[in-house]
Structure formats: structure tokens, C-alpha cells
Image 1 (cartoon, rainbow, N blue to C red):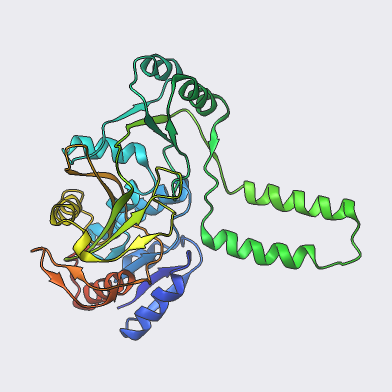
Image 2 (tube, rainbow, N blue to C red):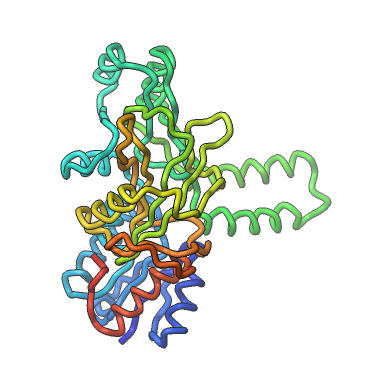
Length: 347
């Protein structure tokens, strides 16, 4: 019994500790190995790195192979396919009848301009990818909307959200590199900073050829972030940034369970089941104008996974006052599935 742990984001060390504490043997890989025997012999696999589109597509193919063999994998292929892809999410939420804001996706600049002429403002524009509200804009008039459409389809929009493993490592490297020679001239400093900037930019890309317009839901000073992990739901309220309509990335949170309606938690559980993402699914939920919860976005990955919650709801919506972190719940479920050889709660 051996789990293959693929090095990546800030939770890599936490996964390594969790597997060790649960006496689960594991091997560490820095990249996807070419040896097919690795995948045939695995009793479990954890892919810490989310990576870019090409990495996710390749990883998703590998994960599907492991899942078809009954091997526990994190994340699931379903979760990875929806990760940081608002276009696919919009299509899926609408196709499956999951309550969500009305969303239009445009792949053609002329069609987007034409639709905007009859749009009712304000509306929200989004790029397909981008975490922490990156690429999300509130459009209040036609002029702003037409300008954003032109920017997307001609130059593209940089979301500039780099994975922590890149920014942290790059920052340490950059500091050592720049300070390696204190006798460097002003011109030399400028050259080094320019080279560093170009290197970091190479990890990003421009969002082009696609734009989303989403119904703006007013009178929400916060959203609900509900994370479903197996048969548990962890909840908090995230307050909007000052002078902004966006809550993601605000760092202003309320963990009091009495402030979270049951129908919000129920919607998170049902969405996780419908999307087959009960292993791990964080949802952003808003209240519509008729006071009904609706899903804005979903993601298997989430920030601050080590923050302790005062408890969680079970699938019967019973509150369990047992302090726990989301990562502990996730890793515990995964290790249990590896040890027992089951994939329950994995998909």
C-alpha cells in the first residue's frame, strides 16, 4: 500500500504529515512520472499542484485512470475539470438545474457587443479563470461594458493570480539574486528587476476570446462560503471589501453558525452530490432578490484550510459542535479510504 504524493502548493507539507501520522506509506514526486507502473501500483494519489490548463488536462487524464481502477485520488477528475473554470461551471450549473445567477457566455466579440446594447445594468463581467475576485468587474453602463469586451477579445486580461508555490519560491530567489552583488550599478539593478518581472509574467497568461456576463444580485453585503467535505459542511460568512461588491479575498469572516440559514447549507450539500464533488467542494452562495440561496461558484481547492471552525453540520443538517479544520477533515477521509481500500466519499 503506497500513496503517490505530487509536490506542489502550500499544503504539500501538511499532506506529508497527515499521511505519516496515519501510517500510510507514500512516495514523493516533483512532477508527473513517465513510468506507467507507478500508476498501476498506486493505492492512492494526492496531486497538490493545481497548475495551468495544460497541466490540469494531463493530470485529469491520469486521475481518471486511477479512479477507474478504484484508487482514492485527490482531487477527483470531476473536481479538477471544474477548477478555476467559470465557463464550464456556468454551463454545468444551468444544465443540472442548480440555482445560480443568470449567466451568458460569449465567444464572439460582435455577439457580446450586440447583447450588451439591450442589457440591464449593473451586470457582472468575469474572465473564465481567476481566484480571489481577479477578473471580476461590476459594469454600470454600456461604455464600460464595450471597453471590457474590446479588451478581452483584442488584448486579453491578465488575472495575475500566481500559485503560492511560485510566488514564495520566486520571492526568495529574487531577493538572493538582487542582493548577491552590492556593487551593482543602477543600470544593473534595473536589468535584474526587469528580468525578474519577465520571468514571473511568464507564469501568467491573458484571458482572451471569451467573456462571461452574470446577473448582478443586489443587497448582499456578504456571501456564504460553505465547504462540503464528505458528510460534513463547514460554513462562514465573508463580508464584502470596503466600497466593493466582492467578498472573495476580503479576509473579513464570521464563523457563527447561527448566522447561516439551513437552506444555504442544504443547497451546498445537494450541489456537492449533484456535481459528484463530496470529497471536497467549497461554494460561494448569495441570497437572490426573492431570498433564496444560489450558487455563484464552486471549487475543490480553498484558502486557509488550517483555520479552525467551531464545528460543522452533518448531512441531516444537525450542528456538531466539534472544533475542526477543513484540511483535517479532508485528509482524515482520504487516509481512511486508502487504509480501507474504499472510495466512499471520494466522488
